[in-house]
Length: 127
Image (tube, rainbow, N blue to C red; front, side, top):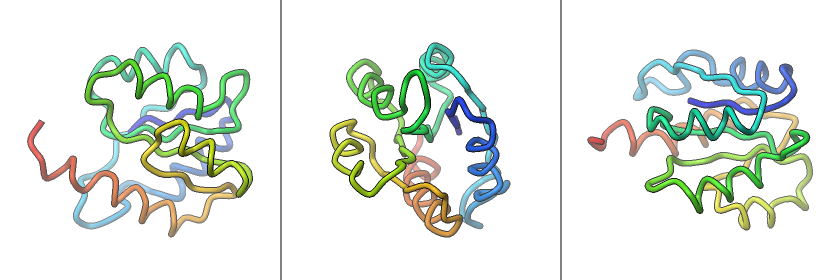
């Protein structure tokens, strides 16, 4: 699972909220932490990422813009979850074509439920 934010605290919050396994049905999570947009694209191009969690408030490139680019450019792009800063940003999350959005500050239960919903079909379906 890729976790993108320019802020190490946001990346740590995501990892702490999800832990090693957000649901017993899922295998243990291997995190790939990323702080810059070029590395996000590089990691996504490997085809080894099952889910990307992108900080919509990251600078200089926000996660919603990256999500839109990945959905436009990567064939069979894995699911994307964006972290939004305000309720008003929900329309931007839709524009980005992300499969889900979770507002900050992160609610661990909501994040775990959303990640489980996005990962469950990928774990059961062969690649």
